Image (cartoon, rainbow, N blue to C red):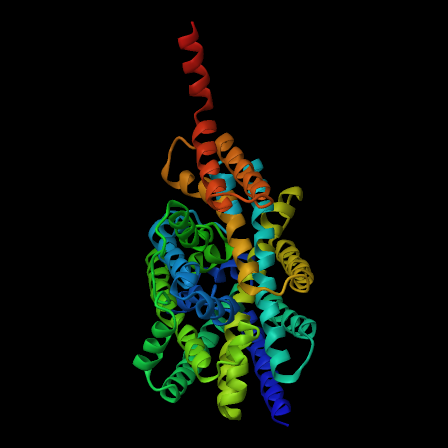
Length: 472
């Protein structure tokens, strides 16, 4: 009976989310409204939307399980790397990109380099989202399974339907408004749970002391061994999300949706602070859950929090927790679906149609939303590890797209040849190294190869001229 009541309220919540998306869709008149909310979001709404970019299953379920298993060193990628990315998006990207008045990162690669670079960057960017979206869909499957015993595939399908509907009808306006509401629910729900479980576990000091007693290295922020290999792996954990997600379309759309250049920058800084603080709440809850219910931690760690809440709380607190968790997942998923759909429509399909009007472009982007959601559903059913799915998506972006973006903004000598070889060589290097045991992280090696390729091929004419001159 309890499972039925909880499922009933979850159903009401999902329907309410669709209603908010429908209400927000009334503001959509043009493609710019659909993609970047017409650049009309107040700073606080833009900040909440940026915060919601990653505060989903990766943080609540994935990172919390990594924290329990590996301690503080296990969550460098998220939340620390994620917060770093949000900060850097304000520091490095918001001002120069906001002035260009673009819809996508692909537009930037075309303007800064050429159409070929735009096409290749878009082809690389779109697949990087599949793992991210799939991770969120897997999370809802886990939630519904823990509540009612439904197969994970059912939850994946339900989540995909709900988030696709309100993203399809309302675009970035729907994503931003629902993100704003969902972020408030996330904060209230998780704080309420944390206060109660901390008290039941004996207080914050006791919880932290117990964790340290059980494992002296649990709160190590730096590598224990301090070897070169360990330091490089540590550095890679920081940059996989910290730098790899900078050239991602979902970040771009949220930054560009702010009312002004200054608002976009401040929204990024505020979201970074929010992420670094609020993301520690589910980690602390998981630590309390492990100490209150040690047997639960022996099974699937990704289900530790949902199972603890089901055993420990009454209906109201269950609704509060699962409402917060659903909010986190849906807010992340919606932006992650809209982003690659926008790139697919704007940068891959649109250039092949001359005189394509704004209304037709919006139809193409909406169709792309359905395609992206369908592919992500398939991928979610093939891999059920949330942390692994997210890590893969960020690494692809780091090795293929980061270098052409940053060098294009801050190195005048960078050109289309350098950008093209940087993307191709970086990506191929990463894909090849994934199949071998390497001393150093494949992602870091691939990033270095991407940077070197950019520098060499951007100067290839000068190098040929220099070599020819000295040979004579």
